[in-house]
Length: 81
Image (cartoon, rainbow, N blue to C red; front, side, top):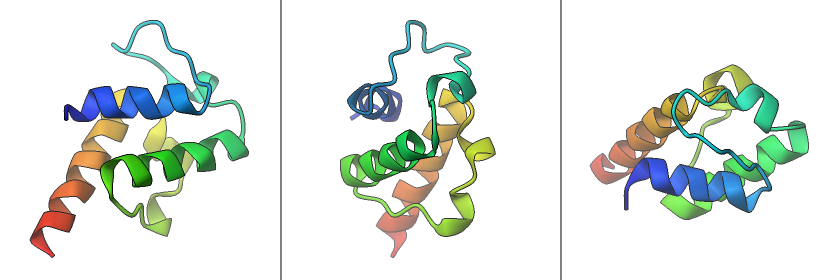
């Protein structure tokens, strides 16, 4: 599955509706820490990855591209292990 599509699905699942995926700023879309953590859990379950604690900083999740890059990086690490 396309990583970007999967990330958007996870955002929608936590109630984060985005109209345009290009250049979206997620700092306004993810409303609070509970939504943020729920989103992380959605990513982990959807992509079968584990997001390390050092990545649980909202600045690493402020754009769709940064999240897609992280998911792809963590997915590749899981394949290598």
